[in-house]
Amino acid sequence: MASRQQPRGTVLEVQYEDFVPKSDWKDQPETTLFTIDLPGFTKEQIKVMYVHASKMIRVTGERPLAGQRWSRFNKVFTVPHNCLANKIHGSFNNNTLTITMPKETITKMPNLPETSETVADKVEKLQEKRLLEESIRKEKEVEAEKKKKLLEEKEGILRKLQEQAKANEMAEARKLEEEATAKEMAEARRLQEEAKAKEKAEARKLLLAAAAKEKAEARKLQEAAAAKEKAEARRLQEEAKVKEIAEARKLQEAVAKERAEARRLQEEVKAKEKVLEEAALERKSMDESVRKEKILMPEERKLPELDYTDSTPGSRTTKPLSRGASEAVKSAEEKLSYLVVKEKKSGNGIMEKISGREITSEEKKLMVNVGVAALVIFALGAYVS
Image 1 (cartoon, rainbow, N blue to C red):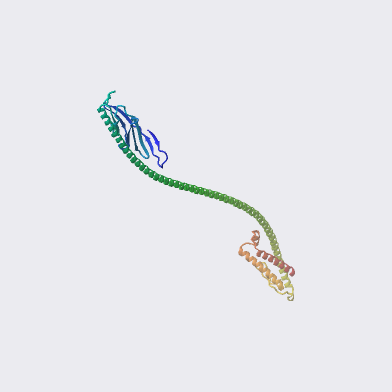
Image 2 (tube, rainbow, N blue to C red):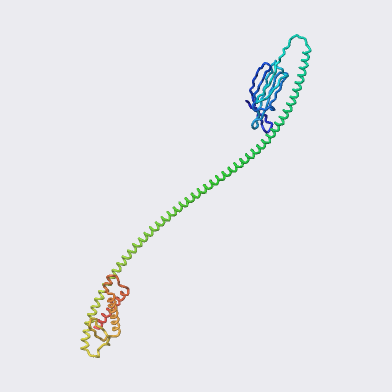
């Protein structure tokens, strides 16, 4: 079965499929039968036409299929010579077209004169011919009417198909337009999402780079600060160490100086104690000599009296001295008594304080005053003697 397309003149293209039906000849004594199997066809869709010039019968038909496809066939066969063309007739039952072609039963005798029966036969044949022509004309008219009606149906179907095709085309165009719009929107959304994702990735990358740079900078600053702090601490330690060494050296020098001072004070105290002892001995001898002179000398030669207390324990005598000498002696005795009382309260002697480096500036001044007082007493003793 071959398919043929209609020329592209209309919006819709009707496709024709050529159908080759099965056919069969059956020869009977009085008739010849020709059958054609036409499944799916109706009686109105089939046309049978006899061509006198060529003594052939043409059978055609068309029927619509699904969509824009049509099925058609065209069957042509020759009528046997012994068949009566004017008595050919057909029938369509059970999808089978049967064409019946009666055979001639009277044989003609040659070279016989014409009789009245022959004329009658001729008249009858003429009438049959006229009737056949009339039937053929009617058939042609019916066929033309059917053809016109079929053409109208075909045009209606074509118009309907065109409208349907136009509607389908519009729907398809709308669908394609919607699909293109949706595709464009999806593509734009995808591009936007890709751009947004790219921007986010770039921003994240920049943030990570900035954070890494800040961390590196902070680490660098921390390391620099730590190095600076270490250097500063090392410098401060070295300065403190130098300062401590200088301070220790200074303290050592101060200690050595204090020791020398204490040694000097000890020597001075020893010298002053020795001077005091000598002064006490001198004063004792002077008191003895004064007592002796008092016994020997008259009352007029007595000096102005001044209370003078002997330093020896248990003895107190009074000798007349000058007022200045008496005040100096009293001051020296008060200072000596203050020093003695202070030593008794503290429980430490002056030598222990000097050796333990516990002597104060006041005590130093007091020792100097005692030494001066001892010298004064010694000078007075010398003066009196």
